[in-house]
Image 1 (cartoon, protein in one colour):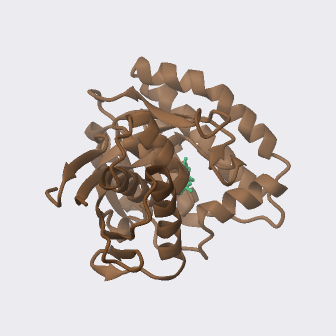
Image 2 (spheres, helix red, strand yellow):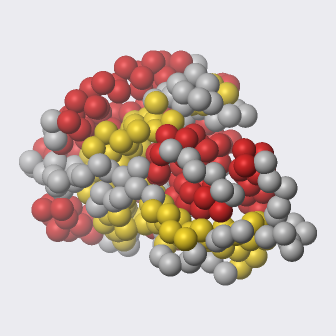
Length: 328
Ligand code: PMV
C-alpha cells in the first residue's frame, strides 16, 4: 500500500475546549474557536505494510513506546476499522514545534496522523470527516485540519462534532507571542485536568454556559476584524477556564507567579494604548494575542519585568496538506 505524508499546524484556542460530554468519542461540552499557527507544525508519514507484525511508530527518529505508543495504536485501530483493514502501519512523525516553546503538539500531531493514516488506508475523507477523525485522537486536533480562524462545533454525536473554517485567509495584523515560562509546575495533562475540573468544580457549569454564549460574539469579532473584542473575549474565557481549575477539589493550577506577571503586564500595556491580551492553556506559558507592529514594545516591557523569559512569535497558518510519499 502507498505511503502518504501530511503536514498539520498547531492551533491555539481563543474560546477553549475544557471538558467532554462524551469521553469515548471526545464530544466537548463547549464549542471552541481557535487560530491555526504558521510556525509550528508536525509532518507525519504512514504506510500500512503486510510484512509488519505490529505497528511501528517513530517520533523525531526515535521509536515511541509506552502510553504515547498505545494512544497512536488506538487511533490507528479506528482508521483500520473504518477502512476494514487489519494490516499494521509504519508511522514516522517529525514535530516542528520547538519543545522550548512549550506549545502543545497533540493538535498538530493527531491532525497530521489522521490525514496521512486515512489516505494510506485508502479512505477519501471530506475535510469535515477528517476533522471528526482527528477529534478521536485529541479534541483540539479537530481544529488543526483547517487554517486561519476555526470553530469546532461541539455537536452532540460523532457525526455532528467537527470543525469548520471561520476565516481561512487572515489578512489583518494578529499574532500570538508565546512567553516561555520555565519554572514548569508538576504537569497535569489536559485530559486529566479537564476531567477532574468537570467532576469537581462548582463553577464548571457556569464556565460551559459562558463559553457557549460567547461563541456568536467571537464569530462577530473575527468577521469584523475587531481586535479589542476578540482579545477581551479570549482573555476572559482563558481566565474563566483557569478559575475552574483553582476551584476544583482538590484544586490545581497551571499558572505560576510569572504567568500572572505577564497577564498583569498585558493589562498595564493596554492602559498605555498597546492592544495585547493573554490566553493560557494546560501549562504556565502565556500567549499574548497581539499585533506584529507592537512586538518590540511588548518584548521590551517583558524584558524589564521578567529579564529571563523568551518569546516566540507565531502568525496565522494554513490547514492540513497531504502528499503521496514523504515529500514535505
Ligand atoms: O486536545 P487536548 O486534549 O490536548 O485539549 C486541549 C485543551 C486546551 O488546549 C487547554 C484548550 C483547547 O481548546 O485547545
